[in-house]
Length: 146
Image (cartoon, rainbow, N blue to C red):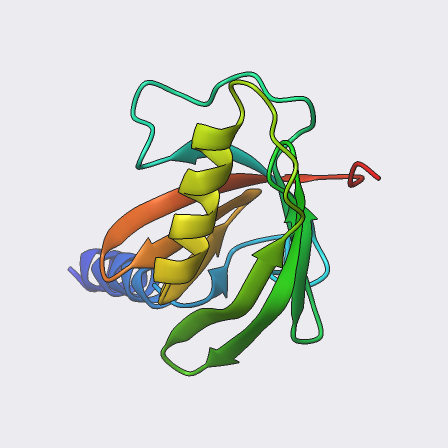
């Protein structure tokens, strides 16, 4: 009986630690950090049929309050703020070239950045959130396209 009680206590402790390790607005169990990691867009909620082919990878990088990357055609840049409850992007602007077929994804990314209020990092994945809804999904990459 003592062995069973000990085993159940151990299992309960593992479950509690696993539940506590997940956070809607932060990173957990991850080798990647929100900041300083190069992220490649893999999905947008505004494009449920998938991302179109773009001249460049759609990327995101956050470093010391600054955000920048490629929208697939244009480069974008701006600032962001982190607090205990989430992530907000501010003053995001981009260059203004037109690329046939890429603008829908680029517009969707800009809309997602403007609507983001939270995030989480899980393994090699970054999710940008509005409330409990996922707006955009990114995968960590080793290098960022120049």
